[in-house]
Image (cartoon, rainbow, N blue to C red):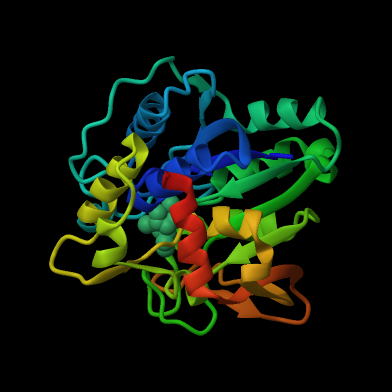
Length: 297
Ligand code: BDR
Ligand code: CA
């Protein structure tokens, strides 16, 4: 049986890879892509999401625009250095096959409301703003969510936004706090594991010559520009964990989030009064990379 998922995303090169995998591996039923501002502004993440669906000839999957700005804070400076001024470092995608609509959190709520309770998971690859709107504005559906699997945060690794904060969580710390405390089953996939799942040049070159394998090579080529020999596959780890949690070591931890000022706003804090969430702490990187490859054959 396929896993029924909604992907909340800000594509983004590693988001693009995660989405291509989800569509190509044949093991997910992707109900929709909801978009959020993060790696780049919302107009662009929405366009990129539609373009990725067009590559895969999946105009049947809706794209629904969410929030461009965090719950309460100013948007962080866009990190064009990683994802480029268009979110995909100049990679040209076809035009979306269908227009995007508005109202991501309302759409997720109405989708959950008519589904079998627990049958839909949310895979969150960007700042958690849309999901925070969902749980605050539609509390009646929180109990219907199967699981929210989130790429974000760091525990023992240095941050990539502040010294101890990770980009997605640093962008909207208040949203992290809302989602962790929502009572939904939440699994966090932090930098501690995503930095272990690295694409090396030979892995990238050996990806199959399928249309989406070719695009994945291009995406990874851009991601690894500036002479890097490998790159951490952050967002794809969410998809891999959804399919094969056994590849990861998960632990239940009580977590809080730093709601102070940058640079460490959004930092995860171990706090016994915090929310109990599953956290991926270790990964069998070889198995993870082998599983990822299966999405591109
Ligand atoms: C996260 O931040 C973004 O730049 C990536 O797409 C990923 O979701 C990694 O910290
Ligand atoms: Ca992302």
